[in-house]
Amino acid sequence: MIRADTLTGMAFSNLVAFVIMLTAAAALGTHGVIDIASSSRAAEALRPLAGESAFLAFALGVVGTGMLAAAATVFLPS
Image (cartoon, rainbow, N blue to C red; front, side):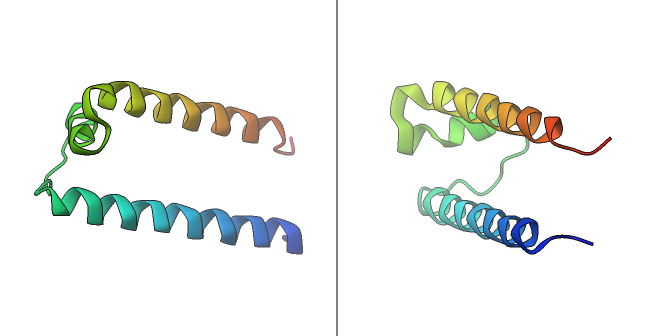
């Protein structure tokens, strides 16, 4: 059975992820970016918001996500 703190953390992280996706969709949609089919296009879509450092921002986000996933797997029960 899932403990209450785990359930609360999962719900909160899903809420944060939803808000991030909603905000990104609204911001990118405002700039006319509605078709993202590759990671390169996703990084390019950040250009109106991040300027010339768009690819760096995207790369840092991908690396940060990977590090978060790696840290989470350390705590998985065997």
